[in-house]
Length: 505
Ligand SMILES: Nc1ncnc2c1ncn2[C@@H]1O[C@H](COP(=O)(O)OP(=O)(O)OP(=O)(O)O)[C@@H](O)[C@H]1O
Ligand SMILES: [Mg+2]
Image (cartoon, rainbow, N blue to C red; front, side, top):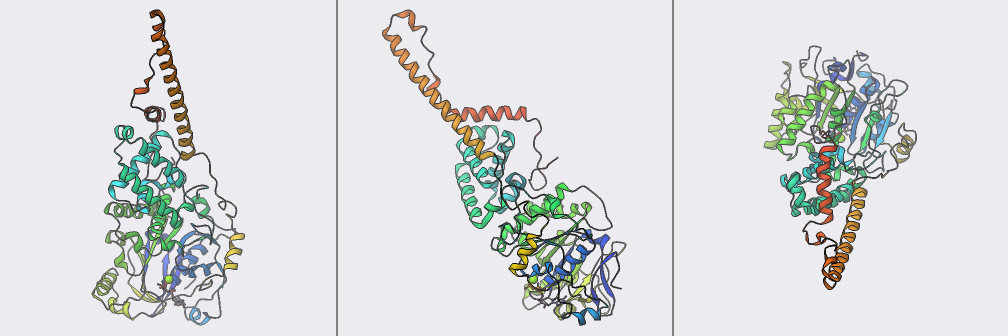
């Protein structure tokens, strides 16, 4: 019963049936919900390891640090009885884990370039308002047009300064930019930097292949993003996960409905994604989730209450594991009703009552069947994990990192020539031109003076008056000409994807 190769064993129903998640329906997404301490993280762990065992790479965030134990051998004795009741014998084996950490401390650093992240998500990370987001978009447009590489936050800062200095020209050629908005974005950038965003932006940028490996024994790599520190910056956390999801969406080819997913993505603390997100962003999330299915990626939202997830997204989550919910307050009662209504009822029990009566490590389970319809909801005892339940020690984590297949690939940041350097050079050039113009003007003035005191014929040969009085500064002139020629020489307009990140096609 537990060794169906086409399905992931979740646990055993109270009636004694195996509750499975079919691999070929796993790209139809899912949700794991439940109050604090009811077993969500353990469910995530057994699902992640189940996918890995089937050769499917997994990405998950470790919000509290307790998921890291998936990298270690588990205690087969402690859970022998629970496993035995389900006809399961625990292997106790660890999953093939790669630890990641945006800050590069508890895992290999993950970096992306500012260009890749794009204006939409960056605006979200920076908590910009609509006007400021508009200015940021103009700045990106200028960078695209001028072929300025935006790799790290220094580049963005330099670009914004440049856009500010040339606001008039850019306003005419691209779009309006107000100094106040630029200043506000610069301040937000500073804050993002202080929150640790500095480490995230730059190179070497993450290559998705490095998250989608299978180990030599055919198991899928389990990518664990340490998010213990990242959770202090909820917007950065949510925007980062959304970026990763949109990268998968942009980069992976269509494959329709595969026998098993190509990658499974767990979005823990999913409410952070939706909390006061603007409507436009919600629509995009909904779109990405809907379309990523045919790229073979399964997305599983983990959250306390399914009501945290907008209906349009929730409706797309076919595989459901609902742990216990409390229902004391009216809001909780509403959440409970919503959770109960999302299940196909079981005549044997009342769904809402059952959700409240579940013990720790138990859940209501409904998955998609062969035909793609939901199974009748079942009260289920969730299986114990093979790997360790609880955190890995720092020494264990270090050992995993030392043996990692990506060791050395991302550990050191590189800084190649990009917008900051280019603009600096351009500024130097402008300064040179200015100096030359000034000295030419001085010469001309001297010549004029000389000519005035000299006899008439020589006056004609006097140097023409330099355009020192022109209101245009050399930097402005340079910008204008670059903006103009850029439009024609870079014939391909750079394409930006659904969330504003750069498409590499
Ligand atoms: N499937 C299971 N098998 C055995 N024990 C379990 C199982 N699920 C949960 N438990 C026990 O319940 C405890 C709490 O579970 P877990 O950490 O998954 O809760 P949670 O819902 O993630 O809580 P939080 O919201 O605080 O993160 C675990 O430490 C473990 O002792
Ligand atoms: Mg948890």
